[in-house]
Length: 161
Image (tube, rainbow, N blue to C red):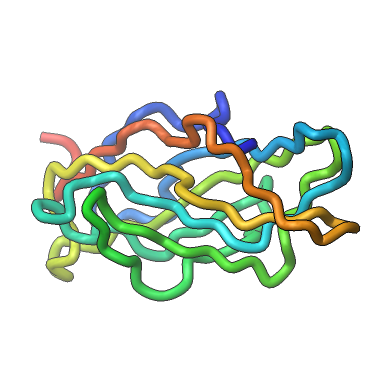
């Protein structure tokens, strides 16, 4: 099961050009109690209107504690509901049998001069798909997505007066 974690950052306002912004925290839980699970791929959607808002974010990374476990590869795909980022883990994320793993999503925001960010835009990051399998059986597993969405973040040209 994939869900939003209670330690997910509250909605925030971030300035264009800022780096390492905390965007969401997701909890991956093995609920069958049969075997450990390995997660090899993950898709995260930036839920924003792509007809109004530009890509805005770059260098999206997932962390397990302070360890980087994955970086979004390539440019995001534009969808009707926002932008889709793909993570492919060189070393799969392993969720132990009856255990859980928490991954936090951080990202940089394009600067204003890049013309790749939209002022006063709202973004919320949600896990839209995960590819997983049993650690020993290698059987394919379809994780249940249970509201795996971070809080809305606002991007502005500058912060303050």
